[in-house]
Structure formats: C-alpha cells, structure tokens
Image 1: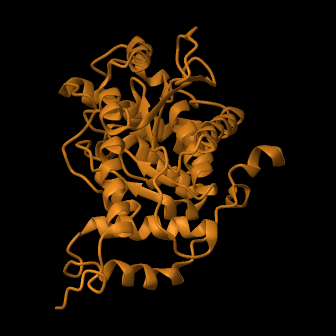
Image 2 (image 1 turned 180 degrees about the vertical axis):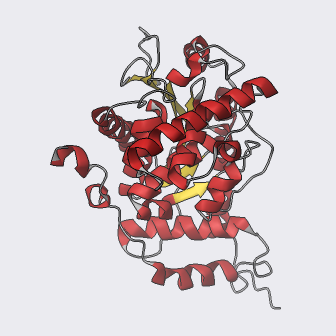
Image 3 (image 1 turned 30 degrees about the vertical axis):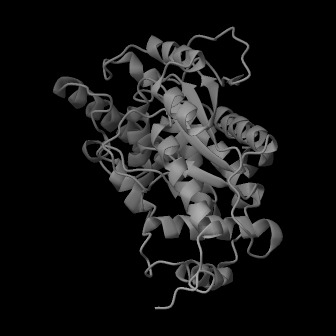
Length: 364
C-alpha cells in the first residue's frame, strides 16, 4: 500500500491538538462561583467545562463560550448486506428518505427548524444518484452502495481513504461557513447491521451482543442479521486471525460509505478545534473508529444520547462516554444530536452570564 494511502490513518496526518488541561482548574473555579450549590447544574457543568477548554485552544486563554451556527450533517449511503431481508424497508428507502430530508419533511427537519440548526444532507454512496441541485445537498458518492460484507470486503482500501477525505471536506465546508458545533447523522437501510459488524471486528464481541432490532425487525430477521454478521466475522478472522482489526481494516471489510465519511468529518472537526456532537449507535461507532485513528479527537466530542439500540451502551462504555440524554430514541438522522444542541447553548449561556456570588452580592 502506498504511503499516501496509509497516511490518512495516522494520527499525525490530522494534527489534532492536545487541550491544555491545566486550564480546567480556572474553568471549574468560574463554574463553582456561580450563584448555585456546587455541582447543582450536573452535566451542564461538564458541557460548559468542555466547551470552555476546547475554545481556549484558539487563544491560549479562557474566554466566553461562543456557539456559532450549529450544524447537523446527515451522510447517506446504501449497503450490500441489505440485499438480505434484514430490515423493515427495501434499500430504495434510503433514496426516498434523502428526498424527504431535502423536501423538509423528516423528523430531523422539524428538529432543526425549531432549534435554528443548519442542516446539510450528503450522498456518500447511495444506489441511485440524485440529479438535484440544492444548497443543503452535497453529492460525493464513493459508489452505488457497498458490497455484501458477508461474502467479501465492503469496499476497497482506496475507497476507505477517499471516504475519509470527502467526509473531512464536508465538515471543513461547514466550518468555513462559521459553524463551531457540528453534529452528525446518518441514513442507510441496513446500516445498523454494518455498525454492529464494525463493533464486532473492532472489539471481538460476538454478533448476538452487537446486533439489535434496528428499526423494528421481527425475530426471524434478527436471527438472519446475527447469522450474516457471524459469517462476516468468520470471513475476516480467516484473513486477519483473532485480533481486533484496525479502523482501516474494519471499514474496508465491513464498513459503510456514510460511516467512513462521518469518521473523516469528525477527524476534520477535531483538527479544526471545533465541537463534535455524537448521535446514536451508528454515529457512535464512527466516533469509536475516529478515536482509534486519532485518540485526541475524543477531547472534542460530546455524546448526545443513549439510544434504544442494545449495543449503543457497549460503544459508550468502550469510549467511557457519558451521554446527555436518554429518551429511548432509535431513529437516527442526527435527531439525538439536534436535541443536544439546546443543552450546549444553555451550558454556554450560564457559563458566560450567570452571576457569581460576588457580583450578585449573595453571601452564604
């Protein structure tokens, strides 16, 4: 493999900064001196501390937290594994839902509209190309869906690198427009199976622990889903042995184009020193891959929620992440990430503007 192809999988390629944790004492002192009991705002205090630390990267000192043009990017792609009946919907629904996003009719549109969040949809590799020009739609398909990972690699090494590069470019475009908080969502029939397979080959967990019912499949479909992932695990083990795979190997063998592009987008966001809002199970698996490539990327991640997908908790535990919400969501689309944006905004507001005991002349 060429040096150019492998470099994107080295943490040095992304040049992600180490946050100056020596500032945390001053940040916590500021939070603790607000007119409230110590720790009374719970995880909002953790959010504020993280935002303050991340944003100190630009100046080297503490400043007010700025929340600028929060954005959600939905990456959409199709999956070869979905040619098997493991979903409640046929693969054509991926394209139909993307059209729904563009038309403004999906849940994520409603959330973004009501919360003043910018929404962009990206074709990362759907079966059917869309001849649409829209300022909120980006065409950067790697191919017409991945291969069936139960019988062969999902994509080539070149496609993995291309996906990371294009995902990074999508995030960079939003950052150039002024966004400093980026959430990520996905759309792709069969992608819970892909995420489960990725989790299995990354952590050596069996398919019955990583696979869930996704959008609500029946028991027969569930058993088929587990069997197909088990077949893929055995195929991969025949090549690589029993050791967990690298991020590059995992994406090549059982990945999805949209998941790979989200990985690139997360890494580019961290490189730019901006906040990453991680959505549910599938996007959390992308976060796991990003952290495996460049561990420093996790410093910039806030985990929006714990979904109803059974393996999501396993991913969160692997990352030692504490989700902000637990609403039983299992929709995807970045809906959980969108719902976390108001929490981020109020965390910034109390950090910036809540009175201190001294300024309010409150004596306790």
